[in-house]
Image 1: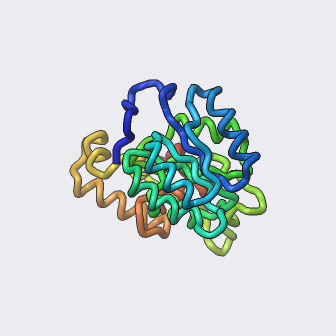
Image 2 (image 1 turned 90 degrees about the vertical axis):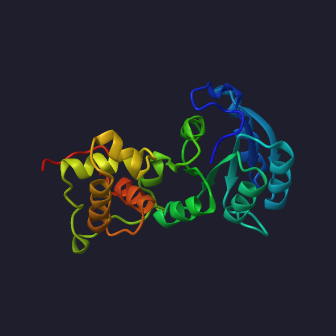
Length: 228
C-alpha cells in the first residue's frame, strides 16, 4: 500500500483530506481544523455512498471515515474506498474503544483508529502521522472511560512478563514493522524473530501481530522493558 502524491519524508502540508461523517457540524469543524496542521480538506461526504463516489473522483491522500453511518457502515465504505482510491490511507473515527474494533478496522484496510470523543488535537496529531502499511492507534483509545474495554480482572492474571528481546520485538511491531525488518534491525535470524513473535502471541493470548499490538497497548506494555 502506498500513499499517492506523498513522499514519506515530505512535509504533511500537501496532504489532501476527504472527511466522511453524517454529522455535519463535526465534519465542518474537522475540515476547518485541518488547515492548522497544513492539510487541506478537499471534500466532505455525509454517507458511505457519497464517500466512495468522492474518493473515486478526488483521489485524496487521506480519508477520515466515521464508522457509524446510516444505510452502510464506515468499515464497509472503507473497503470500497480502498478499491476506488488505492493510494489513499483511511483513518477511522468512532465511539467504539473495544480492541476488537481496532482489528476490524485494520482488516477493512484502515491505517489509523481514532476515538471520536477524544480531543481534536489528538485527532489532528494522528492524521499528521498516519502512514500506509500500518495501524496507528490514538493513545486515548485505551485511556479509560465507559466505552473502553474492561481491565483484566485478578482472575485473568497480571500482564505477562516479557524478556528484553521480546519487548524489543513488541516495540518494533508497535511501530508497524514487518518481521523481516525487525530481524534485520535487531541482528537476529528470521526464524529466531518468528519465534519471539510466537512467544508474544502465546503470552498475550492473541493470534495475530495486530492483536498483539492492540493487547500490549491496552496492558501498557509498549515501551516498558523487563530484564531477562
